[in-house]
Image (cartoon, rainbow, N blue to C red; front, side):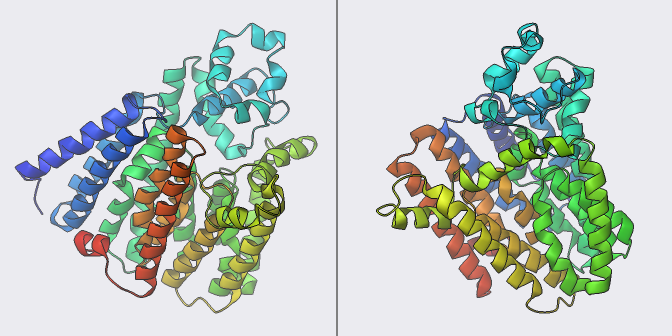
Length: 445
């Protein structure tokens, strides 16, 4: 094992400079500059994955941690979601339930009018966020509450939230290494996710909690493989209580461990999930919460693939709100396909289990009406536990979706989406036919 050579320090400096600019000086609409810098970062990332085996574990881990600490003091550059996160936490500290009111319903209250801090948070939210109830589950809300209990300063609250996310990610990274060793895969593959610029920008920089969810799932997966069923169910429930989407992965357990053991895990996970969610999700407030959840199926649309094709074909016949017709329909089709993949054949080992779950979640995203960049963190994490590499390519291509904020709902925006999904289709095809591509050859995966 060796330290970096002088020329490699140059690439480290280039990566740092690009990361600093994107996190501290750029905005959503600065697509051309951001994409150019992201491309540079991704090229450096590919090179360092290529030489990862030449470096010591400590060198790899310290470098990844250093990169994740770079955005620590930055306001999220590419997403304003954090202002809603802090808003929800602040409401709780003032005795107001985050699922009871939309922000728009509170702006005429004396409580809001007397708080310049809440007014500043409200001014930074998107119009969609202002008009809808919170859809962040209980354990996610805990990450919002801690900063609110400590500070009424945006920067300090963001720093505290980032530290909480990073601590969770470190534990997830440790268990990812344990998982890789258990699966007879090289533990250095964990660096593929830790050093990925998409993960650094979206999870640490933009404070999206898919990274927290993924870390909790890595812990749960390891506990399942080592037959610690109750603890595994607890961490799976915690992951569901950060983002609901880990529910999609539960059907894959049955063909892996058998129906008796799977039923025990399902039951225990269900009990833990209900108990955790119930801390915030009171029965009287479930309708409010579900209204916001349902928006993702029949109202929101961003960077979809199959939905975009369906909308284009059907537009001459349904020229108004096609999403309300085809959004729910496509989600139902994806559920059928996911269950088909989950139940079709027995799953003989952990490697096959992770691969099946990865494909199931990819199908969910391909049929979704909304695919924000951070949504692909889960299948990317699962892919590290398999021999598939196409998700690495998607972590580059997904950033093309930010072109929407620069050019709006224009032909150029649709071109970016087409390039993204055509590129993804090429990477998937190469993976399915076991053909090496540029990434696999150069990165020595």
